[in-house]
Image 1 (cartoon, rainbow, N blue to C red):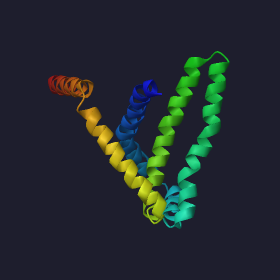
Image 2 (tube, one colour):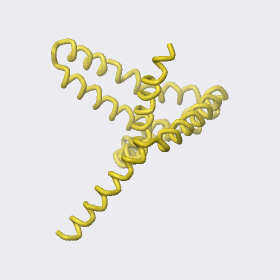
Image 3 (tube, one colour):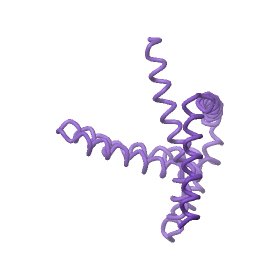
Image 4 (tube, rainbow, N blue to C red):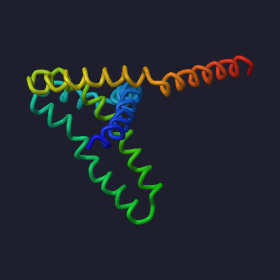
Length: 161
């Protein structure tokens, strides 16, 4: 069982890093989209929900995306692996955007549930420790150097144009 720990930890770290990278920008995108009158009205209703109803609304995207993910697996099984993987990635992207926005709307109500607040605190502590470990790794530091160099080159290229 110990041999599963390292690959599982690496996969979990990748998922958390995606969430960390994607959460804020996707939440901002959803906030812009939600300025539409009907969505703004719906947001006000969601933000006013009591804790248990907020919990149901928070988990709805996971249930709503399940058929999409099953369709992606079906596509892979039918010999369309690229299309299936692209569908899974699109579902992950849309799901993260919606969940990030819904969490921002429902967090105050969810934190009134003692068990949710306890689990959220544990999750936050664990995720922070994992991110500290990942950010201290050689791969992360090397990636930051590459990112910084690419950004500098882009700035120089834009300045020369």
